[in-house]
Image (tube, rainbow, N blue to C red):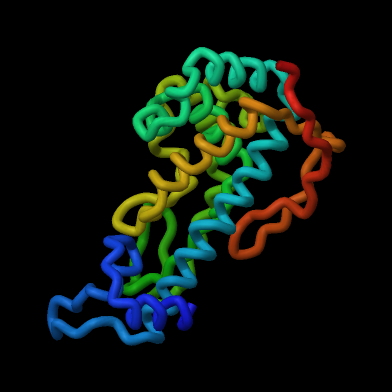
Length: 233
């Protein structure tokens, strides 16, 4: 990362990308730039948070599509109907069955399965109270499968998201509020593009009915094995 940063500075190029923005950013109070150590940390966060989480999500998405052939057929029909328009920036962010599949897979298997916060002051909510410094874990994975908010919560039903506002208060794959993931829209566009490009030509056949998961900083599959089959023309 330091080498990438050094090369950019030496080249003097203006690429108008995120790295340029970070290099030229200044603190409001001091007008000083970030140190190299801070810049490298920010770059690492973008690589890890922006790629590893998306890769995990795609693994779960491919697994769920494999286990639900009716969803795969509906997805293929959408790709075929849209034609080359399926890959335009406008189309990637529009409401679609592809997005429904991605959202439902991330409901069942959210890469950000938990969010931690530290209480800045003594506080309380309804019957609960906690002291300053308490570490609070928001269990996103549990909320996404809570039968109080979801009908048949263990089932893969992409049509749940036909109403895109229906689950605003029980669905947080990217967090919420001022700490909402800055890469949400990029990640969704990236996943729609990959899913459509792949299923335009291929199909993934999983070799197992269940996927084992490991909940570390992110939720990741231990193994998603199977075979890739080329679609008949």
